[in-house]
Amino acid sequence: MDLHTLMILFLAVLLASFLHGISGFAFGIVALMIFPYFFPYTEAIALTSLMMIFVLLYNAWLYRKYIAWKLIPVPILAYMGMDFLAILLLKYVGDNPIWYRLLGIMFLILAVYMYWGQDKIRIKPTVTNAVLFNAAGGIVNGLFGAGGPIAAIYFLSVCKSKEEYLGTTQMLFLFCVVIDQANRILNGMMSPTLALYGICCLWCIVIGLFLGKKLFERISAKTFKLIICAALLIDGLYMLLFR
Image 1 (cartoon, rainbow, N blue to C red):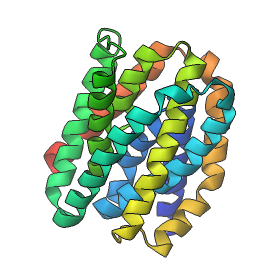
Image 2 (image 1 turned 45 degrees about the vertical axis):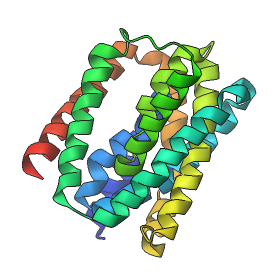
Image 3 (image 1 turned 180 degrees about the horizontal axis):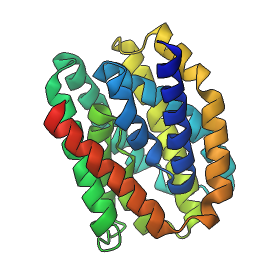
Image 4 (image 1 turned 90 degrees about the vertical axis):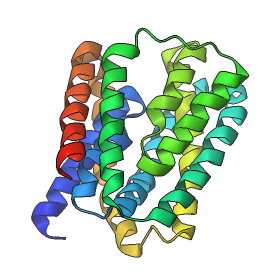
């Protein structure tokens, strides 16, 4: 990888970490707008998963006092069960243009949800909903590396505060992503070279998360949502039509 490409990778990770520091779930979405242009699809997902471990570890530690541990067991079982099956499917199909099309559709759906449905859809805190939403998040994470927003819909409804939401979701996602990454390694999707890229980007992750936390109060929720939605819409259309 040349210096120019490496700088783009650094900037992508910095931006993804910054937005994750604000939202609690944006890293995978932003990273997967960029990574598939430089890595095969399965490697892009594996690299994103590796970096997510560091991102989530930082945030889980930061909000550790607010973690609602009783909310974690059922969602983690549903999430990881479907994530495991989705990874096996991805291994069987391998790198295929269909994944870029489906990723584009996924980005468009997330853009519509974040712009229109996030403030309108209310989810009841039942065990059934915990299983359904986190199982769906596991499927999306296994195939596209971006299952966080779907699982977050459930936790936004059941958590008592913003801090509890962040602490609980970051710890849940940390457990899930560690197991997810181990599964990808066992299925031959992670190479030493990819791991080296992930380690080289650690400084971007730390700076991005730090800035995200510091600048959170200066950025309106409306502006942030519009930026994410526009990026998802543009990249989703490009993935769907031209990849």
